[in-house]
Amino acid sequence: MPAGNRLIKIRILFFASVREIMGKEELDMDIPDECSSGELRSLLLKNHPELSKIISSSRFAINASFADWDQKICENDVIAVVPPVSGG
Amino acid sequence: MIEITHQTIEHEKLLEFCRNHQYGAVVLFLGTVRDFSDGMPSQSLDYQAYEPMAIKCMEEICQKAKSLWSVGKIALVHRLGHLELGETSVAVCASSAHRTEAFQACQYVMEELKKHVPIWKKENRPDGKSNWTHPE
Image 1: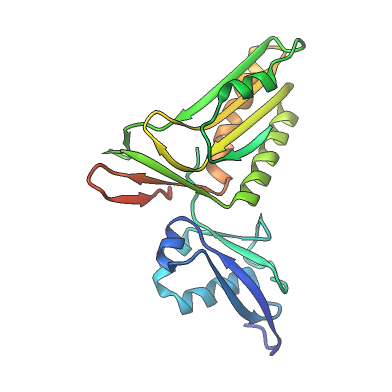
Image 2 (image 1 turned 135 degrees about the vertical axis):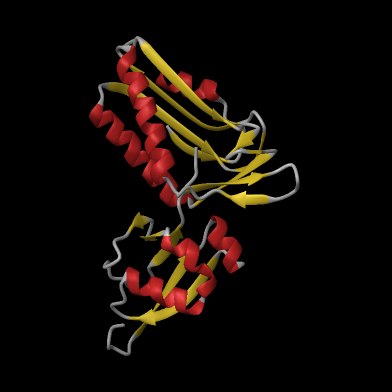
């Protein structure tokens, strides 16, 4: 986790089975500044180990675009946990 | 014409959108709710989406299809919410001068949609159980 003490506010969106496991559609979190998408995944898993199975096959999106795990998250970003999709 | 709707998909509207005197071929694909899925009977489906991102992904896929094949127009509509057996969950329509490009564009759009667009379906089984589908 980055060394800085500054925290930023973000929102995480949940869908499908992730939403069922979390029991909510979204979660507001304060996370360390400069946190990456992958580090947020670790944070989320630490707080919600029940997500471990589905998170391992999920991608993250930042502001409605798929993100790499090293992509940095900024203040007020909206992050979506995107489990494997099944539209069609 | 790229849409997400909670209403019945009226596929005639997609045909109308794509049909044009310049194009000699119009291909329409409908995805419909079937009564058997993953080896088990199915009674109905519920669809959910991350709508702003789904629309964006659907637009990108249709743009890409237009860059790959010489197609005229493409229309793509996905339905959300509760669907009964036989109802249309997705419709894609493409027009082109000749049939090959229109068939290929429709096929491409559906394959990409199923791989990348953030939409999920929940299977409701006759025994009352239901589960979200997350392909491996």
